Length: 345
Picture 1 (cartoon, rainbow, N blue to C red):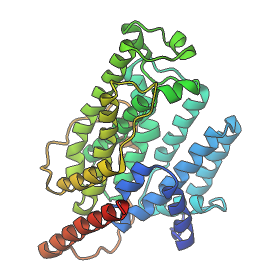
Picture 2: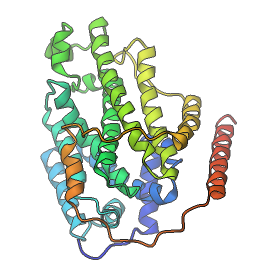
Picture 3: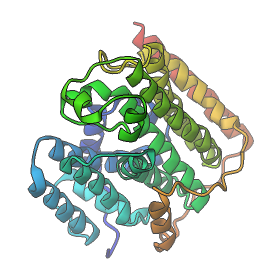
Picture 4: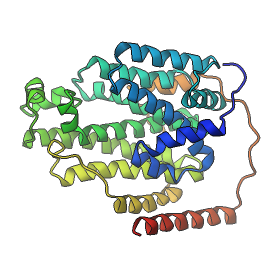
């Protein structure tokens, strides 16, 4: 890329509108991120959302080729005339996001389009690394965190979220002709994957597979905590909120007896508010070891960042004093309480 493009206010506003209409859980957690993170995150999310919609609308290989062309143009400092493309170009330069990260996301969409099967958990993690681990890595870069061990934990969190989504959406995916559960696990439980997909129904065998997938997600949520505790102080509540809210989706599936075929588990707004408050505990979270190697599925993402040139140095604001940090924390509690009061009328 050449000279750094500017993230224009009008483009940012358009990206925010896409964020409000997209993932409610992501939007709720994003409220706890500082504006300096939330704004570029909205820019990244907007491009991800547009890409996802283009594939879901049945654009086929032509749509995927078009998305790769748009990504190439953004990284060549010639973004297409769309707010999300211009915003992506600006953010990619400012935070030195290697092209391999958004390209991995498009690879995941291509896997969806091709109807790829996932025999093992490792194969499923490879898919989750592309559609969600890549996003975790990009978010870490927005927080100006490039240490490989912390990036590995950010990828863990993204993969955990995707595994949770898969556990929640088993029925919905099946009705759309998609199956993401590890097929080897289904056979071990006594289910023929293709026969089940032709006539999806819930029983104890499927419950065991869903339970197993949620356990794999929970292990990654726990691994991610060291990375969250290593983030800048003002970023921990927002990422902690994402961790708790998505893990709670798994708890909702458990409370339904692991039946995500008959209905889709959700987290009520009141429960989200409790989890948002709980996420403030991330401010005081001890820093466990983060040195565990990345998942094999996410190693290429971590290595892509390590190989990329760092961003240009920028003038930083003076560090906050202890009193200023306490004032910020009190203000955050106050905003959470006000949001809950408005929701309850």
